[in-house]
Image (cartoon, rainbow, N blue to C red; front, side):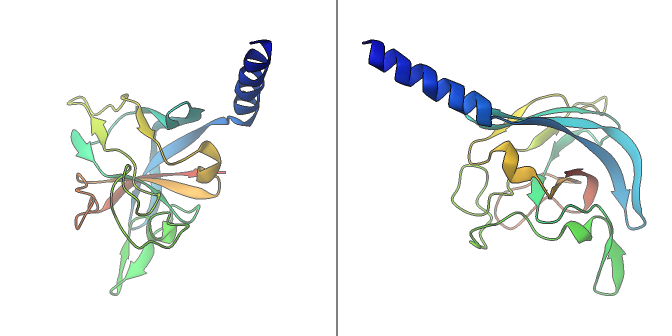
Length: 167
C-alpha cells in the first residue's frame, strides 16, 4: 500500500512541477494594428487540460470564437488587396496538419477553444477549459478573439477583434 501512495505522490509532484501558469495581455485589433488594452487571460495547466481564465472588458456582448493561432503576432496582414486585423497570426494552431476545424473536443486542429462568452456589460470572466492543450502549447502563439460565434465547421468566428501573444 505504501508503494501505491509513493507512486501517486510522485506522479502528483511531477505534474505540479511541469504545470505552467502565465498571463496573456489582450488588445483590441483592427486593420491598422493593436490598440486599447482590454485585460488579460490567465493560462494554467489543470487536471482536465488547459484552463483559460479571462478578465476582459470592452468587448461586444455574446458568444465569440476563441482560438490559438500559429504565429506570435497581432499585426494586420493583407488578403485580397485589403489589410485585415490580426492576419499575421496566420491560421489556427494545427501541429498535426489535420486541416480540420472540429472544435475543442474533436480530433482536428488544436487551435479551437471553447466559445468565449461576453456579458451584456462587455466583460468576459467565465473560464474555459481546452482538454487537448497544455500551457506550453501556447508559447510562441497568438490568442485571438473573433467578432462572432464559431460553429466549429464552416464559420470560424468572423473578423479578428482582439489579440494577445504568449511569449
